[in-house]
Image 1: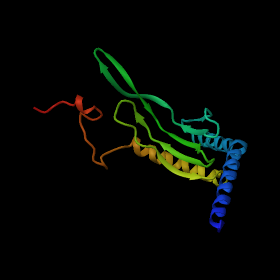
Image 2 (image 1 turned 135 degrees about the horizontal axis):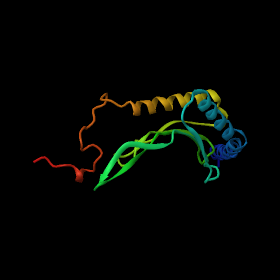
Image 3 (image 1 turned 90 degrees about the horizontal axis):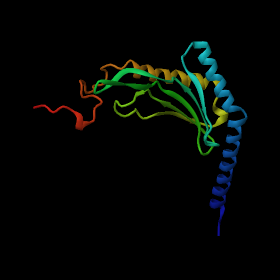
Image 4 (image 1 turned 60 degrees about the horizontal axis):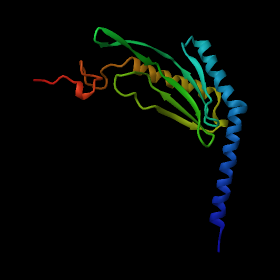
Length: 177
């Protein structure tokens, strides 16, 4: 019997497992700190109102995020005589380890709670730790800001339903009589 094809697959599998371990080590030894430092430099140099957050609850699935924070949206819901402020999430750029040690770069769009569903996150790219350099982070932040600006500066380039029914569940919509 010829095991050469299977042997090739076994060797490939072992290399991938070794790469995963190396990628995880790279994250902890240099990459997480480099991402954090680069994002902090961008904040400092540009005056961007943001903060760098780290998520470490899951070992080898950690994340570093550039967060634009949460604010009152300026929109409130009337509940009888009271008003409840709706909170706006201003968006995030996230660098997160995948199960295999590679890094996924994701844009979380801004959204206002209670007004429809948040837009699906945008996956920018997946990179090996050795591929992620400072100029890439700068490019990711530029793309993130472009997407956030597009969300914030929304107009009628894309037809959308307008009027008082926008954001309301269908069963709450006023019926035309």
